[in-house]
Image (cartoon, rainbow, N blue to C red; front, side, top):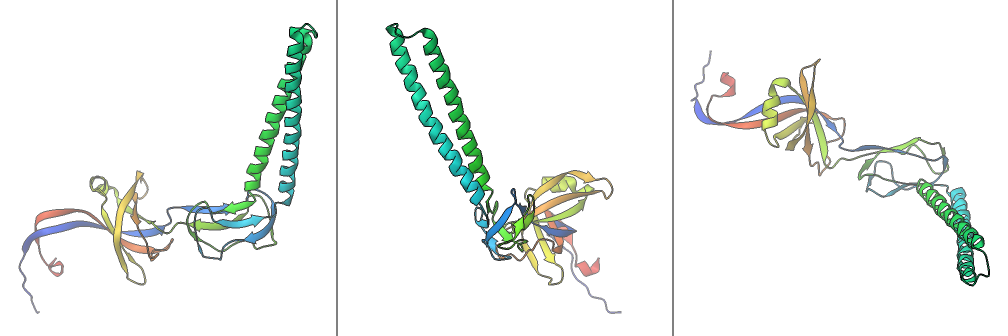
Length: 264
């Protein structure tokens, strides 16, 4: 039997823990409709990268637009009526100083003006409500990320709460993994512990991760603590749902006697 000899050395070695990790999007937002309407336009290509605020779907808004114009006309009419009632109050107040009209007429004019003010306020609230509803007909992306396949095309009629697409943030991105509960103290003591992941299949290793989130409870059935590492993922090499072998570097130990791993 061939025997190889090597020297044991004193050196600094990292304390590492290995686990199975899953790539998860930091932000996953289903795009749903809040109104029932026909789709006029789809503003993105399937699988494209979208920015927060980009127009994703334009819905048929002719009915709501007509209601807004009607509400604006009602508000304009009631504002004119309010101006008239305010002039009546001013005129009756002047006549009352000369005892030309009774105080009751002055009070009635003021009451009419107050009622008209309330009517104008109600009109403004109705108009504001319609404008808010009008915003539901232009469905915009709530986050920046990669969008999936559209579930509706131009001309389709959608219902309330129909899921039209899903936006997932890929840059940066999470890698979730579980560690035995005995590593809780070490994980909490390690500030921004370094994390790397080796992807299954390709064997590619990405090493720019660091621990960002530690769950607030231990799973009593498995005795593991879930943690999440954050990766910049600038080139989108990490894709949601991908599995990989995670290595967490908890700390460096100095003055450790080290021998070749083959000898252990």
